[in-house]
Image (cartoon, rainbow, N blue to C red; front, side):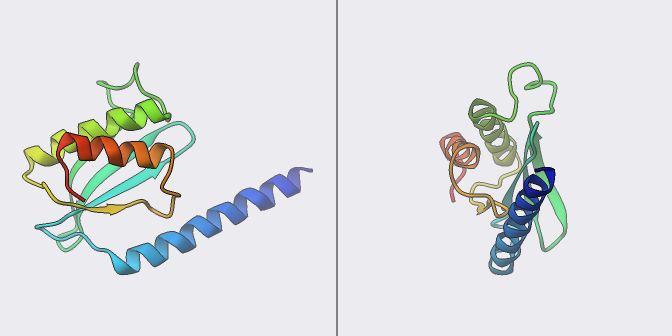
Length: 125
């Protein structure tokens, strides 16, 4: 029984990495249009604004931060808070238009709510 569960999770992870590789071959962050990258674990949610040409992270936000620590977990509500926070930090760095990188995750649930909150915060993608 445990081997079936392990094989299923391994297959899901391999599928996500295949999607991620295909997506990242097509998109790249530049100085005028950096990349908004999303990563989610079982407990936390992370978002980064990355300039791939220089190799710099311009802004980042996660549910681990002290501002969101008590309020947010890896849930849809937490994703909305992280999306709003990353939008504020990106606008402070003059990054208005970004390229959205969902990192192979399906565009629904947490990823979609983070993207919608970032759009409402002022980011364009």
